[in-house]
Image (cartoon, rainbow, N blue to C red; front, side, top):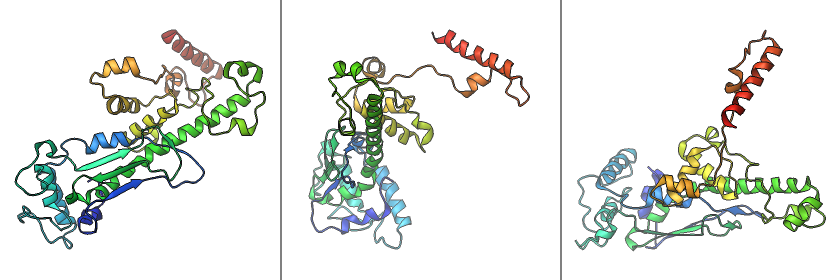
Length: 317
């Protein structure tokens, strides 16, 4: 269920036995931050991901959903040769056994694994649109159809790329106005800044001027997206701009699990975690101290609000 239905017929659509697929940006005169592929690869494509059970499930679904197109199904002998139907069951079963060439001698090291190779730029790379971000290739000619079969899943990398790129652009804007709002005499010696700030030297595409702005753009993205996975990817992408103020737990946990490869979560958290949050008030933690009805006494309300804030300071200072 990680592809489009029509992609099931790719096995009869290609002329060449080896296929290359690449994904690149489509903007002009801009830069993008490449990020998020590693999560998709580790979560969905790594290890023994093809099993007899998943094949049976997919076969039954395709046989029903694409019934008028398909000419084969369960019970058909797929042991010899290639299977040219909307669901190439024989090809998938060859992945389970590792016997790609139908010789009866399967390779245990490749059983259940996808016969693909993915090459990519280092995540976090800043690149111009049109530059190839990653490439996927089948590693055996039998599975020439597989790279594009996986396209629907892999293009989901657009979301973390978009968030990472936007976070970087936001930080550039924050830096520019932060510099313009400060006295040159204060910042110049510290950061070796130019004597005068102009549009040209402030807004250039360069994050080399490091000011303490890691908390100037905060991440509360979980509540604004439609799924836990989206929140995880978006929050993780936020960190690529060097920002650290996040309240999205899912993002930092995803980074620890998929980008640090450490077995002990606690040790990684203590040693490498880059985000920082604080005990904070919200609307209800303040208004619950006071009478907020329409006829409430304003003076009494202000006193209650003062006590609520005083309690926050007492608890956490």
